[in-house]
Image (cartoon, rainbow, N blue to C red; front, side, top):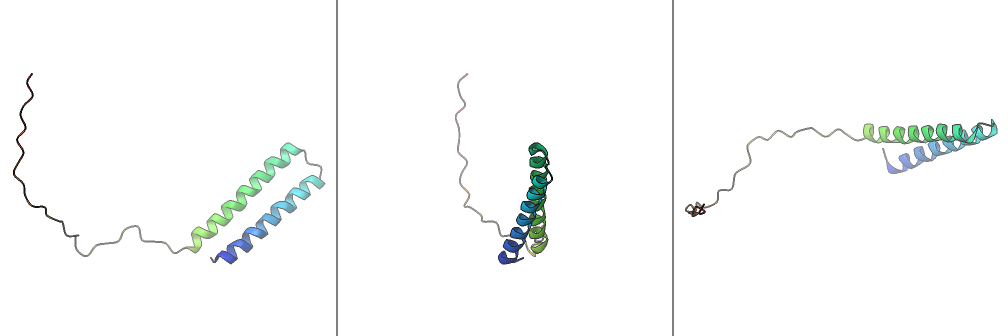
Length: 88
C-alpha cells in the first residue's frame, strides 16, 4: 500500500468516526456512552489501517537457509595463564 493510499484511507475512516460522533450527539446519546462508543470506533479504525499495512507488505522469510556455514575466525593460540590459588 502506498503512503498516499494509506493517507486517503485514514482520512476516510476519520471522517466516518467524526460522522458517527455527530450522529451520537444528534441522537442525544449521553456523553459517557458516546465517549465509550467513539473510543471503540477509533480503535477499530486504527486496527483496520494496521491490518491493511500488514497485508500489503510481502512476507519476509522466517529464516534464510545458508548454503554453507559462515567461516569461523580462528585466533592464534596463547599459552594458558597460570593463576595462583588464593590463600584460605
